[in-house]
Length: 515
Image (cartoon, rainbow, N blue to C red; front, side, top):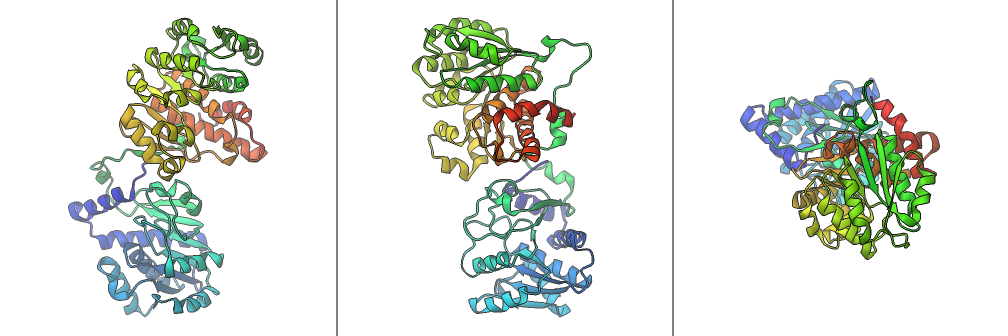
């Protein structure tokens, strides 16, 4: 499913109006009809129900004026609170306001704080509130009188349905800088926007409905929309197929380079996830001193003891043997539980420069690359980097706050600059490709905020690459499956006690549910 920025949506609207010839007032009317349909779906009959609408001076307010008309015609008792001077309302919004006043529908101008008591008194009898204060183009927070009104609406615990986006949510980043409407449902028009899916805004959206307001399907083809929400249908098509006449060699040889003293669990989780995701053969390249740990914990893996000079950490001496094994693989992953010691740094840089199959880099592999990003230019193969926000900040030379403020842009800019696939982990994981495509993942929950879950994701992505998916498709399917496993576990165990090994155990069942 495509997702757009508010700017792209405005351009689509403008093209529809100016080039296709559908008047803006028609689009506004269609939006009002679809919004009214959703209200009727939720409320049943609205006869004698008190529905209060809050309208700003822009097109979002114009939608609210038109919605009020339709609700009144259905028998509702409607009052529209206009949070702007009426003379400041222009264009299509003014047309719909004039219609309301010609019909005798009550419209109350609220531009002074003295009106707050009247608004609060009215809200005591409200059955539903419609939020049409601000749209997706809001920049900065809602403060002052409008902020007080939003706070009042939320305090009353009345069901609120939002027009396009809850007022207060930045449509591009999901940021909330001031007060914000808490909606139980949001009806957006044309295409969903980034802010509907990104935190913290997504917590205020409630159920999201994307309504068709008659923008022709051909219009989207005139715009370079490269952003998508990952959905079940897409992932179901991507899951590698298995045939009856096959053997382990048909499902990929995956090498996971891992291990250091105190961090052996990371490689075990990544390896198990790779196998549970369908890899035909799993190889673990590990420090010789820790070899027995992996032998005991992953009985299905082929363990490669690499030279560590009896330190429990990979050293430069392991590179020749490691490069020899890499020649035989279909996918390689490096980073989980490696440490950032000097000898390990040489191993990581050598793998990046010499690998001949797609490479997944995570954890300490990323931290080492962050010391000298120029090594990325030496890679000869597609690379998937899977940073959490802290690792992303180190890679970009910025703060975690800056990364989290606009996760989509952070991932997109890094991928385009360095020619890699970036998987920016976290709630609403972002997958960004070098060609500008961006994918937002809707699955997952806070129970997955625990050590080891990132290692599981590394194993899944490497496994899917080994089974023949392109690195981008493997990342897209991998993050969705990873989050789906977390959601399935949370449904049975709850989020508080979820651990990474719960995810590996759930992988086969989650895949089965998708195919």
